[in-house]
Length: 215
Image (cartoon, rainbow, N blue to C red):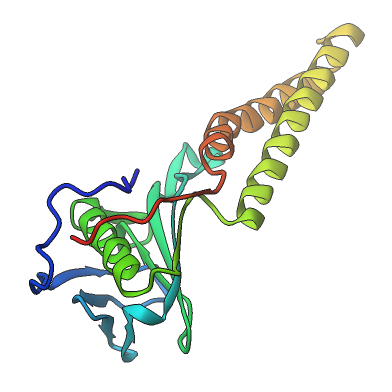
């Protein structure tokens, strides 16, 4: 979790170090090199390059995304858990950085060690360049609502699966073994996801960060 307090800000008027971060968002994206100075956020990829002055950034949001697995394929990982930073600025598209680097299908490299200090500095320098900018920890309201809906569906699904299994046992497992097994499997798949989704619902609610000190 990002902390709004500073631990060693730059002296007033002193130039700030230029920070860099590179990563590939997904299979469909190309690797992007990000560069942060005390004036702008710049990016370069195979699809082009761009820059936005920090003074034009009006919102930065950081939140966690859960690990996604495929229960019916032995729990194979589709995507790992990661941190995402969403930057909104006047005059440019929404910018997204994540703490993992896509390598191949199901394979990601954890780059949190460089992602976290880069994002912390981005927030701090944006706060200095634009005092009106807002900074949030937690998922957007729509994303949080989707997680909450998914939790409700999984809870209902687990209850339904158990009810089907119990009814099959009541009618006689020998003649209704398909209902019993199907109900238990369905309930189990739902239960596997409840813990992960509950964690996202509990920790994903939006909260505003205090204005940090430049680093």
